[in-house]
Each structure stands twice: as structure tokens, then as C-alpha cells.
Length: 357
Image (cartoon, rainbow, N blue to C red; front, side):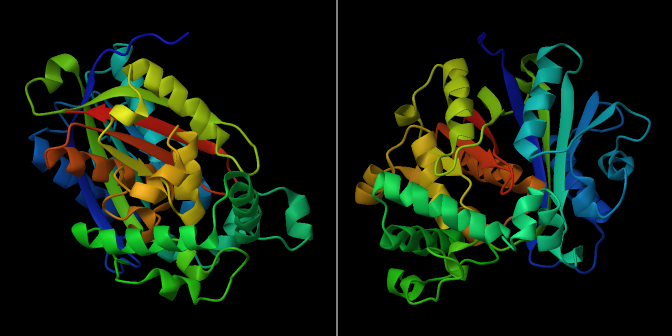
């Protein structure tokens, strides 16, 4: 049963990195830098004003067993209630909001980070999460994406040119934010001229990894009204496997829309995972937005700052990267946004937030 959501506000945010390689800082120092910026933006003292902390990370990415031992110190949470979520940052936001809504906390800090430049063989790490059958057959993560893309394109009548349009538009849109390391001017013809890495995807259709850390500060309605918050009106996450479809986002979005009492056509901007070009279109369909209609008139604001194709993929912080864009979008004068994240292959887990000024 879905109940109407009491208000939880975003009252501060900070980030660091968004570069292919941050050489001069460890992941702990990157988290400290992002947290310091979040606390400075809101005037929050983590030792006095914060009740709970949430860290989204995964031991395999850090290369350290029980990596959550490193979570409290960089965010000011030493000897304080700190929980970890082995999932995407939007899942952490939802856990933080639930702590506030349940009365456990009035102010909760949520962080996630990624330093893939420290990982020598990231494809081998991802293989550990795959069905062993795939590894025996020599199937890698991009091959699975190619199968998913092919079925999606057949089901929805999407052409290779449509994927190239997504790449061209998102890379160009990346110039609107300083977080885009890969923003560039490329034409549809430039994308189509690339060789396939795996059909129907070239290397330009696949977002690159970046090092980044992101911190958000959530507050109860009573606290948030003292600031200038962005409200979380709807939220949900789901896991569901179906080749050629993003059923995980279909389920999560229905729950989030019901909670926020909103339709996607009533929202100003859509911020959706596009780590593969086809995923932007597949995720739009899952959110109830026609990808064909979007490609035809492009009057819908989708990833107006370039998404992951322009900014890169910061592993479990990817959802928070999209939420940063949504908050910037609203602070520029827009009223509302949908944020839709995905944990990436081989997972079928996605999360949706509806946020509003």
C-alpha cells in the first residue's frame, strides 16, 4: 500500500571530482572534500546538527573488505549512527528519507563516491556479479548490453541513427555543466562512422568512468523550511529482470508517481541513466514517456546537462550525479524533475525520485 509522502527536503549538496582520474586524493579525501562543500552550502555542522549518516558503496569497487569502516570519518560521522547501502546513491537517498519519515532522524547525510581509476581490471570485477555461465562463454558486460539494445530497438522501432542522435545531443549538452569531462561537439554522422564494439553499439555509445564523490543533506519538513529546499515528493526502487525492457524503472516510477500524485507529462525535466545510448530511450519508455515522441519533437527536457555520456559514470554515485543535475535544473528556475537511476549491468535495479521546488 502506498501512502502519501510527508515532506523531506534537500537542504545542501556538495561534490568533488568528475574527472577520469583524480590523482592527488584518495577516495576518503574526495568524500571529505564533497562533504565539506555540502556543509558549507547549508551551514550544517555535522557534529551538532546531523542525526544519521548513510554511505552507498560496495566492497568490490574499493578493493577493501568491510569498506564501510571508512565511511564515518570523511563525512563527520565518527562514533555516530552510520549505515551503508550496497547500492546506487538514490537508494541511499530513499533510505535517508525513510529514516526522517520514521522519526529516527531530523537531518540525514547521504554520500556516495567512486574511484574507478584505482581499479586495475574493472571488467573482471563486474564479471564477479555475472552468471558464471556468461564468464565460461566469454560473454562480457557490453555483449549483454548489445543483446538488450537489439531487442529493445526491435520492439520499439528504434534505429541506429536514433542512438547516434542521443550521443550527439548529450555530448553537446554537457557544455552546460562544469561536471562534464567528456562534453564535445560531434555530429550524428560522426557517431555513425564509428566501428561497432558490439552491435549496435560503438565506443561512443558507452559512457566512460569518472572519479567523483557526492554528498547530499536531507532534512525533515520542520528543519527544511528554514532553508530553501528542493522537496522529495515521490520515491521508489525496484529490481526486475526482463531483456529488452527496463521493468525495474516501470515498477519504481509507478510507485513514485502515485506517491507524488503526478504524471510524467506534468514534470519539467527528466534525468535518466544513459550510460549506454539506448538506455536513455529505454528508460524513457519505462517512465511512461514515448521515446519516439521525444526523438521527433525533443520538446521534453531529457538530460539537459548531458547525462552520463557527457559527465561519465561514477559507479554507485551515478544516481546522485543525476540528482545533482536535477537540483541545478530546479535552482535555474524550473519547478520539478524526475530522477531515474540504474545500477548497471549485470543488475536490474533502478530507482526513481520526483523532486519539486
